[in-house]
Image 1 (cartoon, rainbow, N blue to C red):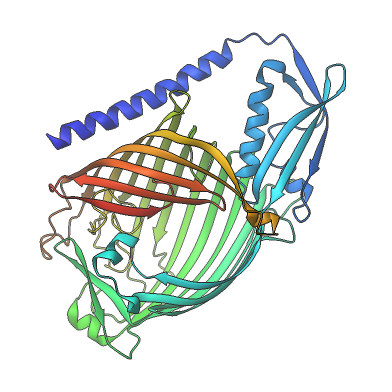
Image 2 (image 1 turned 180 degrees about the vertical axis):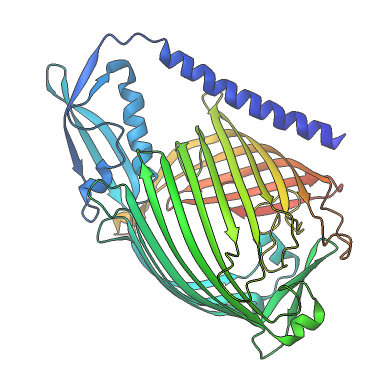
Length: 476
């Protein structure tokens, strides 16, 4: 009975969500536009670090534009949401100020975040917090520090230096420039990192990740270099192109345990990766979306035939479609479909990923489902239990930290997925690939500032199991 109920839930979620979108579009298109306002000037306050042009880049209007009065509040809300989605500000207020007759000034007031974070690192090296709770062990922890400037030069540039020790060592440098030109359309970024591990997951057996550790020795290391180019057309469309190089090596012991980690019996893995992508992002919030939609597609080529021993030749496409709608004052619906389709060919275990590493059917957080292709459906009904409130901590002198917005949502969800594995499942006693996976449950979501979302969920899965799970970030 579980599978039909979940699929009906998913179908209704998609149908209601897209129907709500069509209905609102028709409503806007049939309204009477018989009164206008003219944008006279746009004033920005509160931006002590962020340059004004970065804020103006996010506006759906400019000085001199004419806006139908009946659409004015919608355009002001779009402006506010766009500015908040830069992740540069804790609060944004956008309003009109009378100027003369039908002319109005636009007032934008922002409260900037703290952008430079010299932060110590202490993190658990697991796929998710729930897998660590199954076997708590502080030896599987990372520590160190990173220094981030999220708004370098006030231009939304990101400069990051990471030094991490412990279970999974990492040293890296990242620099991202969102806008290279005066029109603020083209951007680029690069990063380089070195990683090494004393323990790695080397195979999936019985739908569980198996680890190998050689005490006192590093059994895998990797160099990764990346450079990318982005082009942002308008406000909501972004095109990307990227080139990446990976070089990794493993200890001989790993080869003796499994022949599939790298191609053949090799202890060295080298690969060039080229990719291109497109994003259409029209969500009200990238942190915890409630209204709008998202479409993304990536085409990735692993192995370009440049290197002499480059044994990988995989082409795959990943697609994500997400829709969010407001059904009532406090009731919201979200639905998502994601898929990955690869060319058939045996993929090394090192680069093969499906569900269990970031994407998953809720209720299956403790499992790993490997395969070459997959599709994942997710849906949420959310009820805003507490409307957004602001907590003032007067004991903290810093304005960037002493004003905390927060809200709570109750959720009911249903997920389903299918993972296609042509090579490994029969040799490693994996039963979850090549079958439909379904899960459903209820949850409580806590949303607060600095893009923090915590989810507390109780889920049931198609294996007849149930449990309590904790997650960071929105489900999709």
